[in-house]
Amino acid sequence: MAATTHTVTNQVPPLVGYDVFAADRALSEAVERHIRPDVLPEARDELSTLGRSAGSAQAQEWGTQANEHPPVLRTHDRYGNRIDEVEFHPSWHRLLGHAVAAGLTDAWGRPAGHVRRAAGFLVWTQAEAGHGCPLSMTHAAVPALRTDPALAAEWEPKLTSYVYEEGLRPAPEKAGVLFGMGMTEKQGGTDVRSNTTRAEPIAGEGEYLLTGHKWFCSAPMSDGFLVLAQAPGGLTCFLVPRVLPDGTRNVFAIQRLKDKLGNKSNASSEVEFDGTWARRVGEEGRGVRTIIEMVAATRLDCVVGSAALMRQAVAQAIHHATYRSAFGGLLIDKPLMRNVLADLALESEAATVLAMRLASAYDTDTEEERAFLRIAVPAAKYWVTKRCTPVVGEALECLGGNGYVEESGMPRLLREAPLNSIWEGSGNVQALDVLRALQREPRALDAFLREVGKARGADHRLDAAIKDLLTELADLEGIEARARRLVERMALVLQGSLLVRWAPPEVSDAFCASRLGGDWGTAFGTLPHSLDLASVVARARPVAD
Image (tube, rainbow, N blue to C red):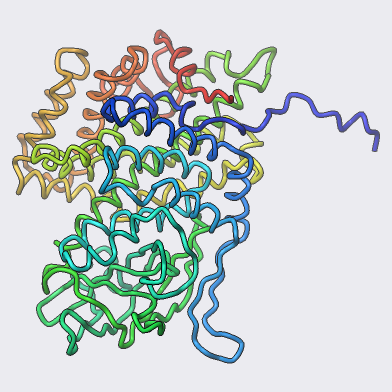
């Protein structure tokens, strides 16, 4: 074949060698907004360091390798002894090690810890999302363990450590540990109160032996797990260590690893307990109440993780359009492509601003903010995670056939996109959780309405949407059947309020016109043509160093 036919033209350079944090204006502005001035310089420096690592060719290669070489289950050694180990590619360990060293399991004990961690999680998981699972579980285990001061004193310093040590050894011998979680069972799924795993108390104070099966056990090579089981007093939370204090391995029989749509780098497993030693966390019969703060924290990570996937997908789409020519000019200058890109950028910025606002509420930790989170977290988890898949799919289409090819990285993003909507309770669970808060916790609704009301008078479309929402909230007839519709409106009104207060006028104007004002189609790229779409796209463009 003639060499001249292999001259490559009009191909886009890889998006590599840039600061993922600094290039994300919505995120960097949120960090400046939510972190007090005396802490901000340190936080900004650490996030830019992490951002440069996330945008490096090395981190991107780690992400590729961790997904091309998924974990492998080794149930037995060569002699037939049960070992129940999961082997990961070295790149998985490099990703985890870098994340832990960057403080992505440490939010609860440092100034502005939740905002710093959420921003770091949003930045770093753009390089690879699968290893975010053990990071999230480890971070979220802290509030659950704090219900037992002795357990917290023993485990929290290692959970929040900046040292990652792979391998199964007694926790006291390790400088840092990771946690997983096992709640669902094959007969019940989300209905954890139907769990059948039994917990029998033994002689030691707070010690039990567990017998049962967990249908989804996250991150099975972690050092410890929070699980639910039926004790004599009812459904109870337990801590299950992989290795016992005397160095022997706990009974933790991994039956198989799940063959998932995406999230290939991460191991999700089915586990059998048969006389498995555990320590009670909290009181018997209060398992859901004990573990609920862990669930809330991981739900926030679902929002942050979806915002990260959206941001990376939109960054790739805008980058592609910036360099790719078609029909006599750059794609980014074509009015219709600009409309699509601006529409995607709006969705990404709205998700980021909302995620960071929730993180800041954890840092503030007042009664008002806790009430706000009670409704805002499940509402955001419902809406942001649902928007992730269509955003990533449309962004992939912006790359055309190149986006459908594995080498682009876009298929991996698309396979990952539905996960956060399912993990920690799918859409109906979140919508019903919002209804419970509306019906049982009036202070939560008051806090939510005060938050959205801070932007009243700034945009007539937002004002009208708030009025319509109040009308819906006043009518409880058939509330369960229309719960999704209601929660969607609550999330959109909250996003609109935040953008009106904090985003540039071109962004808030476009969001309110389309999402709240109804001047929008049913597909991306249907924004009103009279808006300043070029400025919206320019703001979202990732600029390499």
